Image (cartoon, helix red, strand yellow):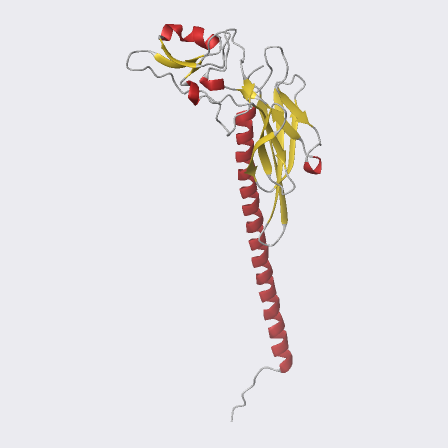
Length: 255
């Protein structure tokens, strides 16, 4: 009779141990790969969010600069925000009552703050009525509070605009006292866009970006460029904190 031989207990234990080591190695590799993927995904999302944030701030900021007297319309309050972040405040050229923002000398006539991002209250074009004239609101000299709706010839438009008349109906105009756009971080790590009036009263506030932990703005030596640095923080699916920063140089147009 043939004698059948099996595994000894020692052999089974060794085999089980080897198999367990292989499984642990495979599981560790899986966890490492998952962690790396989660980290990369979080970094990409933060980078894209910061890119969009910087582009949005920069598009508005670059319209600022100095007025006709050389007074800078951009102010940076260093380390006065949440967690020693900066507070950036500025004004941009505005079309008050649809008037163009440039005066006859080529200087900015009106500095202010759009209530909504990207809106400067400027008309996209001038529309002629059926009779070939343009509708304006005329402010009589000496009695500017008694606006009158008029239609004028295109050749007379510049003369009217130069002394304070504006395009469109008198009832359609709202001369906003909004003077300053402000970007700052709140306690919830949100980058906020605020609009303040001439006495610094808050008029409107909206959230621009989430998870922002750092916001710095620095003038160049000649004050022609503002360097913006924004930092964001988020957790991966493994609850690992990822911090990303982006920098953008913004050249001021109106200098």
